[in-house]
Image (cartoon, rainbow, N blue to C red; front, side, top):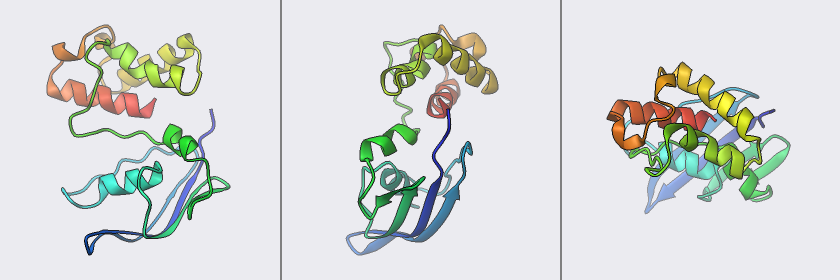
Length: 156
């Protein structure tokens, strides 16, 4: 599956007069996976919310491939399908085993085949050192293991 490149130019977003994003320029190329790290209040979530069309910026341009997301133009549902986020609480589905947590969105949102999703999920679980936990319930994992499952799920 090909990935749409993301190009961001001059992105700005303020809340109550406080600049959270101030002139952000960023390029993410096809197939590249990016982690956004920084201190609390540094704008990580706001940047992801803008890229996934959950938040409108004050200024700047965000492009998904050939389509302009901001200023408004692209299909915002498409943006939400392309961007994965890991929240501070991980938000794993407690009623689904690890493997199902990873494969649910690709199957339902992207319409991918279950077998292909499971194959990819095992590859990501192996990469984060949790292939042996595919059938485990989230409640039976440590905090660090839940975090790695959430990372694998976002990468799916």
